[in-house]
Length: 146
Image 1 (tube, rainbow, N blue to C red):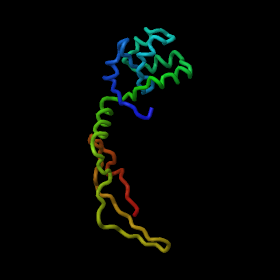
Image 2 (spheres, rainbow, N blue to C red; image 1 turned 90 degrees about the vertical axis):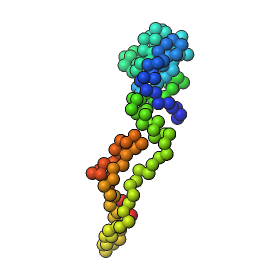
Image 3 (cartoon, rainbow, N blue to C red; image 1 turned 60 degrees about the vertical axis):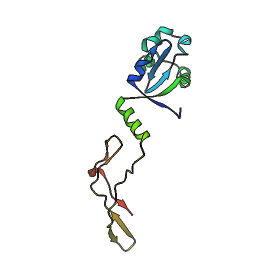
Image 4 (cartoon, rainbow, N blue to C red; image 1 turned 135 degrees about the vertical axis):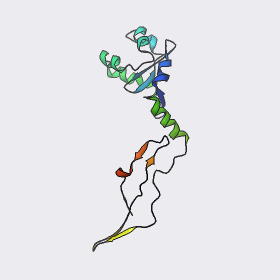
């Protein structure tokens, strides 16, 4: 499960036919098309939740640990909102910008009897990711001890 796909709810909904049947359980998406004919609860049970988040239905039935382990071979990826998917695409296809703001050239030196250290204050810079989401507003930024 190291390599995974990010699946939006919109994409999941497209896989709702007996010959192309995906379900989501606890945030993970599974292609159960090949398992459909073997499902102990019947094909119709899977058909009813095809293309949907079936977490509630799956948990209500009380599936065994063995059934939960079987899901691994049908794993497609993680269910995400469209917004999360767009952010992941933007991040994964763009060069990673430096998340550290430019530090000022001046430092303040504090001296004590036991040690000497420099404290560099980070300027009032808002750090954002590729989609423009604020990662560290100025009030939450901290200083860097050099």
